[in-house]
Length: 331
Image (cartoon, rainbow, N blue to C red; front, side):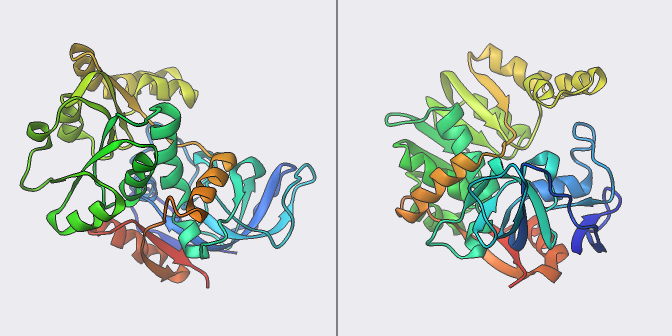
């Protein structure tokens, strides 16, 4: 079957002929119709995770999928051939830039009835990330103030909507050209990251969703109220993440060192930092799908490119200026 993979870290993504996926007893075999493109794919391609997440090469990329069920494992109930579904298979099962993908049934949900395949494929990673940070971990609700960096991007554009749905006041950073766009999504406070300093404009924030790392992350610690929390999805990983992935002692020590500066700064200020890595959850996807069908959330698709142009789609993502998600499609 056709797939797009990286043969060596740092090299361009190329088309390969891959073996058909093995379908386990608890798996659903999905024929891919559309797949979302994420920053995670670029991090994997460039080798940004090689110190903490070992993969065999060549590695088929892709973490979002929407498509049709073609077969189910012997222990699977609730799905049958022909069902239209969407999923995030999990970081241990990346590989949705392929004709067919085997996904654990617990990670799969039926597509929202109001969406196209491309729209559904844009959602799993970013919507689960936003939901898990804001609703599950952060327990955001009315009276809370949330700062979401990069509000026009893939995670940011859905996180703004989730935070507003939960009742929070939402601040976001974006370019001046994206200001109206993020306001339409629900942002109450829009800060031009090129000309304005969010640290000078904000304070007593309850939660920050940071997808930048570096100095943006360090400044984010300083706008929190005491007891507030930054969830980082870019860098650096922390010891709790090392525990979750079962890192060996050498990798765990490396991860601890990578986040030592930010954790020390957080302790000094009476706040906390957590590196967050999204996990698959079909139940949460069903809940998100219901919110979409009810009109509470909507997917943001910047463009849809043919599956054959997957390498170009990754290049377009890294070039920036993308509102929401880029999707590749076999239709």
